[in-house]
Amino acid sequence: MTAEKQNGGGESTLTVVLALLVNLAIGVMKLIAGLITGSAAMLSEAAHSAADTFTELFLLTALRRSDRPADRAHPFGYGKERYFWSLLAAVSIFTSGAVFSFYEGFSAIFGEPAEQENPVVAYIVLGLAFALESVSWTQAVRQTRAEAKADNRGILAFLRQSDDPTSKTVLFEDTAALIGLLIAFVGILLHQLTGSSLFDGIASVLIGLLLCGVAYTLGATNRGLLIGRQADPILVRAIGQRLRQAPEVEAVVDLLTMTTGTDSVLLCARLDFNDSLGAADLERACVRIDNELRAEFHELNEIFLEPVPRTDPDLRAKVLNRYGERIVHHFNTDPTP
Image (cartoon, rainbow, N blue to C red):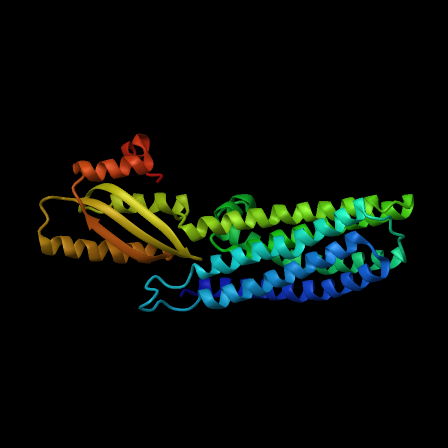
């Protein structure tokens, strides 16, 4: 493991631990305020913080278990455990936060009108919660910006392609937490001004919808990574370019990549080598190309180089079915599998 990866892991752990402590403290305050005021929105926010706390526990488990080295049972390592536990975190956000928020919201909207008590307590807790959440959110943004800068990407592009769900999950849930606090504030304020608990209930439902959106986004991301998403297209193009530069390679017939964990990629390259190479020359060429790829692209964890003839009709049909004619035609000029 490189120093860069170790530092990234430590930064992710710091971000998750900070978010855990913040959410735990905020959740207790929201619960007390919700019981005192009887506000559905405040109780929904307490459930929101509880969901976020469970999320951080899942993420800490993901960070610890995904760093285990490869063994006989798992020869490609345990990197995808990070995606499994992050997927559970997304499910936790939905079940612990969104469902309870909907329940509180619909109870307030369709149930008996409830009197609002001590709204000042709710405002104080919301203000403290916003300040504390801002600390966690700032740390998540700082880490995301640093990682995006290291990849020479903007934040939005980095979030779309990132194979590390931990910092992304914390950033999304902290952003949702800040928005949820504002929604709760407006709902409680309108309840106080109008005397109608309808606005409190609507705020609670909106918080539930917000959590559903976050849970769906994170769930879809981790689902794709668990299934086996290809590596970053920029990395794939760079690998293809490097392979084409090898003097022994006449054509890149097929290029397969899969993200097996954070900063961990499996590569299978089917190459048409020069027919004049003997068996020993071919072996030496494969060893040299493997070493050069690992030296240049530190994300490559496993590399498989397969010599194949580019004219093989069955292989060409497989590549055509996977990528289409346009990609195959440009495989040796600008590959974008």
